[in-house]
Image 1: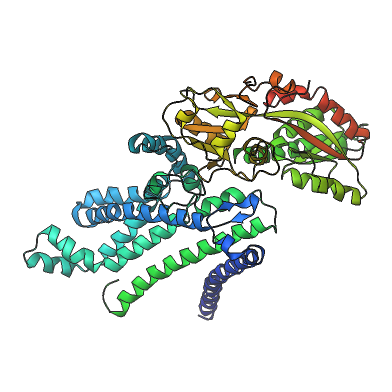
Image 2: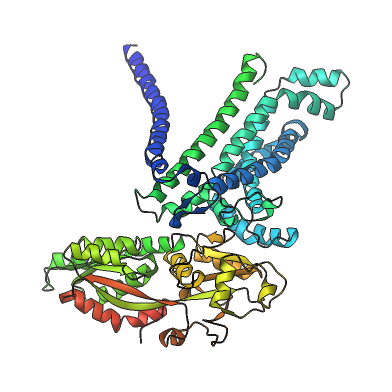
Length: 295
Length: 293
């Protein structure tokens, strides 16, 4: 008796320490980012840092093209992935017979396990030539190529989370819909999907967080040209993302130089964006809970 | 990327080889004497060649251990000035301020040219353009010429490919081709230039894309890319890069690769450098660099 209480106490404190250390580690990472990145503000004038030219070896540290590049690639990827993912989730959860669901669900989860460098290689050798020939772009290494690869990478997250959200809609909603004389399609579209709305928003946000932080595949297929993606056909031209910039340049940069601090400053911007996305996702969950409705 | 991996693996192999060398000496107490170490650090362009030299030399001279690391020309030169390495590898000449700093430290650096490297300009084999002047290449890479028809080719947009901006080759190409060696020039790579993370990235894109133009060290050019013949000016002869044209100076875009020592080399370092400049040059050609005559 005495013994078991002791072991319970030990396990409880262990879990508490582990839980707090996770939070502590995230805080430490942020402190580290700030320490290494903030000096750039004293070394580079603000208009330069927020400017349109990224030539780090020649003193131009404008991060605007990189931020816009990341945003363009990510938002496009989610815009493609959301309808596809939602439709797949609805099919798997609401339409497909039980045996088909048993096959589809694990297959979707396997998709999430494909290493990003493999997808990058696939993108470089298969998708890029296809984009160049089909869309008639000058090069296949474009923003849209990156978005297509990111769509592929974001889909498993999106489908799994959206499917959980649909799963959480009580059976009584479906029964009520059908009893009112609605068809299956009407029940799904007018009742179930709206009821699962916040979960679907969360799914999109989590997928976006996954997509904006992706590095290797994006670096291999977007061409990495630090240009301002502001033309109407910017999607069909190369872009350089924040993650690819950090990954490509960090290896060779002298520790403590302005360039080094600038790369960490990009890390801060990326961290803040990801944090904001995750906060939005969390708000969507909590807002629903407060109304006492469904998760 | 892949170059770095190769470097890492080769370093591991060298480390293992060094241990393998050390062990029989210590266990059998052979009369080879103590192991003499040479530290060699610097340019990433040179690192594979320096490793190949070090391995071959250590096989010939069991009593010598040579460790090679990359990190960039500047890193190697700084380490040589601080006395932490014996030989610094550099893909560029020492700057005047570096020489001044070394002399303030009581060190007079000595320059040794150990190999030459040609930079080839490549296009897709289906591109009819096969010759360019340096000022045309400069106009292409700075974004003034954007269509192959302006150069006698088909009506296609030009897609610019380059290595990442931290590569020594990038800086060399900018200073000597885009800026045509003029120090007052402020030209930069066009912002539309695609920066590829590896030589492999450049060769894949050049192979697939008839719009592409790229550049890289001659050792990295594969058979499925078309090498452009370059001329200094329109009236001058157009020359393809090769060992012969680099050595007689007719190919305009080649650079010497250096090793620097603190003062005149002595003892085993002198012997090693002498070996590099003689027998070692066979390896230079095998790795795609241009051997000295």
